[in-house]
Image (cartoon, rainbow, N blue to C red; front, top):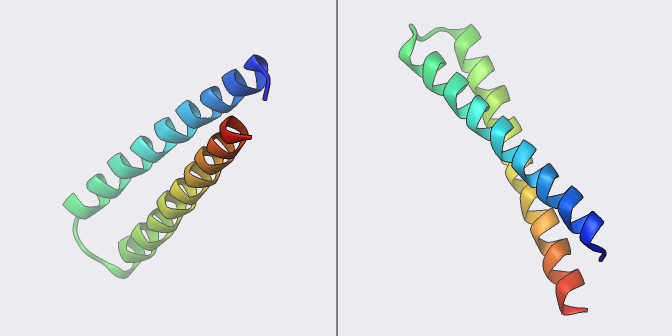
Length: 70
């Protein structure tokens, strides 16, 4: 893995982290608002986004580790 690829992956991880933090803020705002079916759907959708993002970060971390050990 070249230095450029590592930098690209690092930039991608930073962007994913920023998106996850923004999603967490949105979830917090929804939780503070009145509970209703629409909010539950939004929360469920946002939770799926967070878990998907975490899975992506884990996959990238695994790839970086694999490349480093290779």
